[in-house]
Length: 132
Image: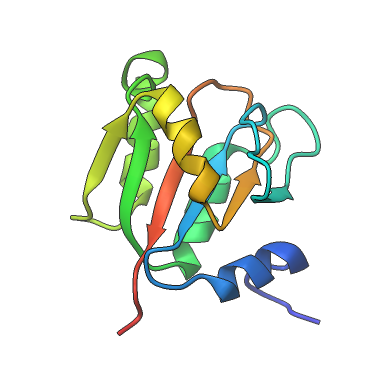
């Protein structure tokens, strides 16, 4: 039994399988899952776990080389979005696309992690980096 780290078995496996340039999505409770993309559903009640809580934990273990957000996050939930950006590695490129385009991009994701977040536009695509 693990006593630290990612304890959720499906999520731990997904993390271990990430390779350079793989896309991992952290989404709010309402983000649709494209056909064929693995769904890791962590949400168990409204607001839990929170989007920022999941992003913060994932960044402890993942090498992220780029992040992609919906442009709408800048105006709909700017304070929450700023906190999300502050959890990312310093200096990585951050890109903004329309929410519609972000949902289309999730079709190429390795997996989508759904949180219990009930705030709209709290979704991020993380591009996996390389450990060497």
